[in-house]
Length: 244
Figure 1 (cartoon, rainbow, N blue to C red):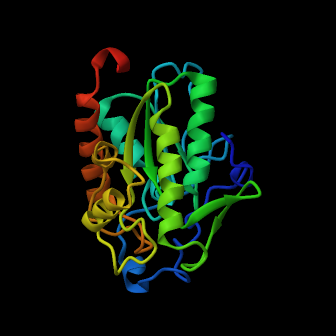
Figure 2 (cartoon, rainbow, N blue to C red):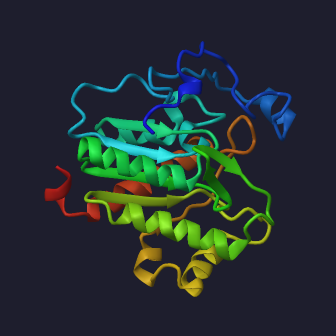
């Protein structure tokens, strides 16, 4: 769970996935993007430098391509911005197309192996699943909203009950129909569906997408900074004895 074998040993590239001219949603935006981007993966297959030998005081950052930082320079992805902001090593275990099922499994393995003090999870689209040990993206009608909500709540509760501090975030428009549900409506749906209680919903940080990365789908530096401010405020509310 703590390796992405398909990424191990890849050469450094300037494009990745939908962050290329052919697949970009706005080719003019891609051509005019002013910042240089390279993709390089460590020996575990994550877009991060090698892990330190001592992992006793790091923060673990879990997520999908928004955490990998598709379309962003490495130093501007949110785990790197958070590391610079807090002066504390942030381990990026984001994976393109990662399902919430996989994130929950990954968080459990981190707790089992490393006894972390803090995990930050940026939860992904609700319609994704882990099937036969692979992350799979389903069509809108494959499960439906109710099944998606219950699957998310199952994973949320697993991670929230781990013996560590957890910061929960949701990517913008986590429900597949982005034209129908805003973040505020999503919070209401979570409460009304009864899959999570009011306090659990309040513990999930939502945020707007303030800008666009080169691929025109993922967020860029303004949103990364906004997210890290939310995380910092949340961390400051935790019992300091549990974190330091």
